[in-house]
Amino acid sequence: MTTLKMAVIGLGKMGLHMIHQAAQEELSKKVEIVAVCDASNENLTSFVSSHPETKTYTDFRQLLDTHPVDLLYIAVPPKYHYSVVMEALQRKIHVFCEKPLANSIEEARAMLEAAEKAGVIHAIHFSMPHEPAVVKLQELIRQETIGEIRKIELILQFPQWPRAWQQNDWITSREQGGFILEVGIHWIHMIQKVFGAIRVINSQVQFPQNTGECEHEVLATMELEDGTRIQLNGIAHFAGEERVSMVVYGTEGTIALENWDQLWSGSIGEPLVPVQAEETLSELPVLKHVIARVQGQPAKIYDFNDGYHAQLVLEALRNPDQS
Figure 1 (spheres, rainbow, N blue to C red):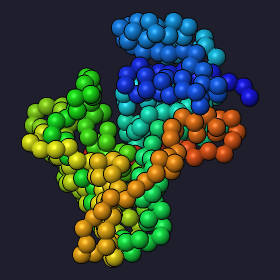
Figure 2: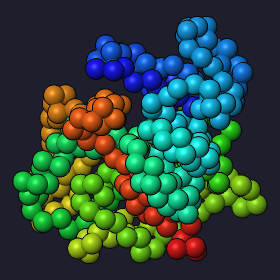
Figure 3: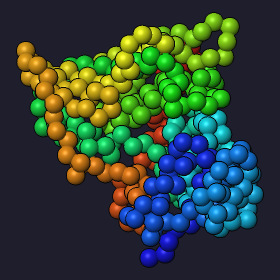
Figure 4: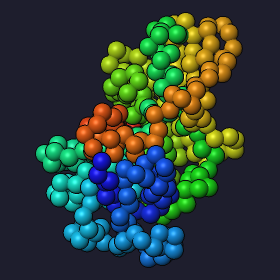
C-alpha cells in the first residue's frame, strides 16, 4: 500500500500533536509527514531541531506549489482556515481541517461546496464521537436506558479563559476565540450526531464592554427536531472548578457526561453512579479514519457537511442579533 504524503499547516499545539500521532507505529507505515508550514520562524527552528528531514515553509502556497502532497492537515487559527483550505481544494488535495470549519457561515458554505466540487476527501477533526465515553453514551441512548429524553443541559464553566495551556494571541479575541467556539463546537457536533439536528431559539451572550475580547457568559435555549429542549449555561472568570459537561434527563433516569469523559447514570430517585466505558470502545485517533478513507477503505469521518451544520449552530449562539 502506498504511503501517503502529508503536510501540516500550523505548528501550534494541535499541529505538533498530529505530527506525533502520525509517527506512532499504527500510522507511521501509512503516512509520512513530508512538509510543514508556520508563519513563525521560531516555531520552524524548534521543529527542525527534532525533524531535520522534513521540509519547512513560511508560506503555505509555496509549500503547495512546490511539494507533492496527498493529504493536508490544517491547524491554523479559525480565520485562516478558509484561505488554506480553498488553495488545497483548487489543487485537488485531500484536506483534514481543525474545528470549527470556518470563521463564518458564508465561508463554511463556500468551503463545503468547493470540497464537493473538487471530489476529494474533506474531514474535520471532530473527535468526541470517537471517544469511549461517547460511544457508550450512544449505546445507552439507543437502549433507552433512561426512557424518552426530556431535556439536555450543556454546562461550560471556566475559572480562567484561556486555560493555562492555551496561551496565544487570538483565543481571547471576539473575532475567532472564546469558549463557545473553542469548546462548545465539540459538544454541538456531538449532540447533533447522538441526538439529531439543533435549532437555536435564543442566545444571550455577554461581552466585556469597549473591547474586542471574547464572551464571558452565555445563556441559550436550543431544541432538537422533536422539540426536546437544550439549555446552555456558560461562564468564564470566576472562583471555582472548571466543568465541561452534559446532563441528559429522561423519563426513567439521567445520564451525565462530566468533564468530557466521565460517564454517570442513574434511575429516577436514585444517585448517579459511574458507568464504565472500556478503552476497547475507542475509535481514536481520527487521523487513522482519514487515512483509511483517502486510501478508499471504510472509515468513520466527519466531513465539511458536518462542519457546516455545526457552524450554523455556533454562529447563532455567538451572534444572536444576526441569526
